Length: 531
Ligand SMILES: Cc1cc2nc3c(=O)[nH]c(=O)nc-3n(C[C@H](O)[C@H](O)[C@H](O)COP(=O)(O)OP(=O)(O)OC[C@H]3O[C@@H](n4cnc5c(N)ncnc54)[C@H](O)[C@@H]3O)c2cc1C
Image 1 (cartoon, rainbow, N blue to C red):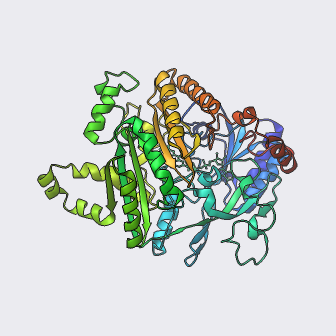
Image 2 (image 1 turned 120 degrees about the horizontal axis):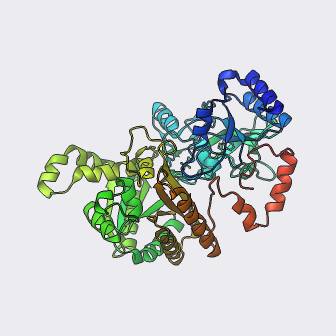
Image 3 (image 1 turned 90 degrees about the vertical axis):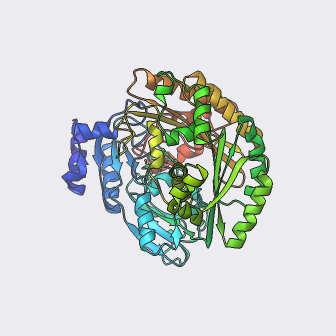
């Protein structure tokens, strides 16, 4: 340990207490392990529990010129987990800042710190009477609301676009000073939790997907529980049926008939959410033969594409929207089903007689539908994390941790307009590249806003097989290059591919660099992140 680092460690210990400055090699290695190879090392882990302590950490980093990388829960699985964007950073673990500091039951908002997890907010809202729903992602209940929002992640309900539903950020800058954005910066501003823009330039976006500050508080808007909720599910039998469905759904999104995010998953993706790779059916061969995929699709009754969305409103509004969806999707999809809470409760209650009478496998249907149904009502679930174990030969453990268990997973998430031709081009391109490299092209298409579609492609593999890390990364780079060549840029990057931002040479790079130079002249905060 050199003198500079030793001095920084003593300052951090003094500010946080020794127990909050970790140097144990085992813990450092574990924090530097992602779902793909990074080769990066972490020098220490700091765990402040107040904003003052975060400020002290940054001041010390600055004084000694030591790079520091913030994470909220560090569950950025598939995009780099808790691993920093540069080697030999100190990790600023914000999970101990985990207070819900405000709740307004009239206007529906909470004010949170970065360590607040999906599960924590969900439980909190239930305790407060369950009048508001949060939006949940398909990631772990123990992932962070703020961490996800700062990556501009998304979920499933009408509040799916997380960054579109927050305001009033408290941000510690690299020099240790802090600011509040929007009206939050104006003393006694009555609308600070409800008005996003403040006065003058809107700056909140500068602290998402950036390395300009550490967010220590944020106000998050919540969705009032509707009178009636009804989910709908459909499948498309053939791959070639996708464009017609996307083009039919576009007007429904544009006109606000469907306000939830609408997720459409291909057969590979659905299969990996319900079971692990069928090694016994394939004699250990990969990628999955199409005949096996078809056989399993028939057994589980899913199609080439499988959609899920939800309707929220009064009974009348939901009925009206249902009518329009039925009319629009008529003949374009297979098995359009509308499912509400009563339907599920009855199915659960009368499972045995229904199975006896109809031969339908009700328990399997419930296992499949229940978590998606609840997710669309803002209830986080561990269920989908299991898909990270798709190619693993070990059984899925009760306490899942894809980093620890050698699960290989790299997400690639290009964006396109809601356009059938674009969606099909994306799907075909991704399928060709992944199959060529020997991986199953599991993917989802999410109609997130009225006009745009976010596609998430997963490269899932077993890190314990020699050479798989390299093969998967080669596949990822090939995929990303070809997507970008065709105009499909990702909405978010993994910590291993941040250099792409510079390589693509967007016109705002110089502007952002001058901000970085002004705010962090020593370059200590999250070096390389989206830079
Ligand atoms: C099966 C599965 C399903 C998933 N489903 C989804 C999904 O539906 N939607 C989705 O969006 N993602 C999804 N993910 C990806 C990922 O797990 C989530 O996005 C998760 O929320 C990110 O981890 P986190 O919340 O712990 O954030 P963190 O890892 O804590 O943060 C992410 C990044 O943001 C920055 N950051 C974090 N906190 C701060 C801060 N306070 N100040 C400044 N910078 C900060 C850091 O650079 C960090 O690397 C999924 C992953 C898996 C494996």
